[in-house]
Length: 339
Image 1 (cartoon, rainbow, N blue to C red):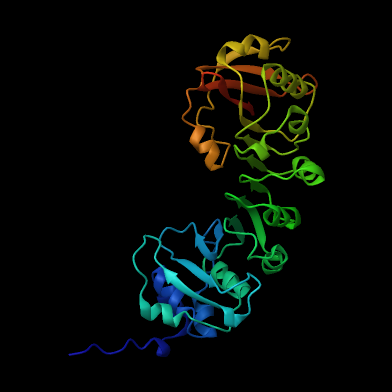
Image 2 (image 1 turned 135 degrees about the vertical axis):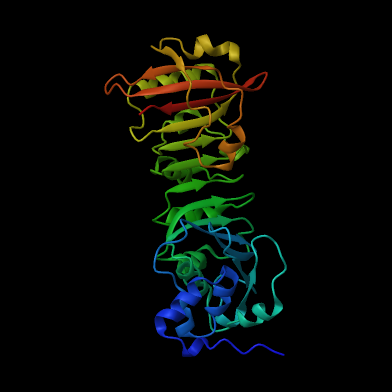
């Protein structure tokens, strides 16, 4: 004996809304594609997700920070500047369970452009903040096309992963809303390099590649709040100069810095030469102000029990300096402003 169909269409409007809102994420995403009315019912009234991540790894994947809500994969035929006929999508469980073929067919909406799908997903999770991750991005993708797709969206963070070169840099340079930027193996030279270094970001992260090796002069151009540098050209003398510049007012936006340099633990007297400091208990061992994966990898470093507290001469602002060995001739260094 088969069960009767649920008479959803005959329910009062408020009751229909309640039914949709208790659906699981997979069902709600599928239901939202049936009609415009279904789409409106599927949108929550209150914000649910804090961030939506858009990954461009050849195809495009949208994922929210809501644990049970499915991700959405947009498969691209050629360029990111696609026509509706060049795109189709399929829904996939976050936990990796194979998607239901019937749902996949139901989600195939050829009249939707890439921006339509992004807007649709953002509305379903009630979120307006985006992290954009670019990996397989270059010869097959036009930066101008991607910028056109994301125009007007609140892209707060951009991560360039691996060998993303000039095309990715152009997206960073021309995206007005980006607050946090994580660079991959490539970092530009010339005026482009100077422009990125002097731009005010909430967070600025470079990789360990040769392109990203920053000199003291380049570091002094930084105006970002939180900085992670996987590789620098600093030795004990240039690090000493950097600390003195901080004492004298360098980068008033500065909040925290984590970086790698070619010095040893025995060089601390030279590093601190001419700098007034006092030893304090280090209470920033979790490096909690840094959000990048690079900082997370360093967070369990063998940091000293005591930090060296230094102070700006004009404002009296204090910062804790600490060291952790990375190798016999390399140290991880952190400098964190105290509030």
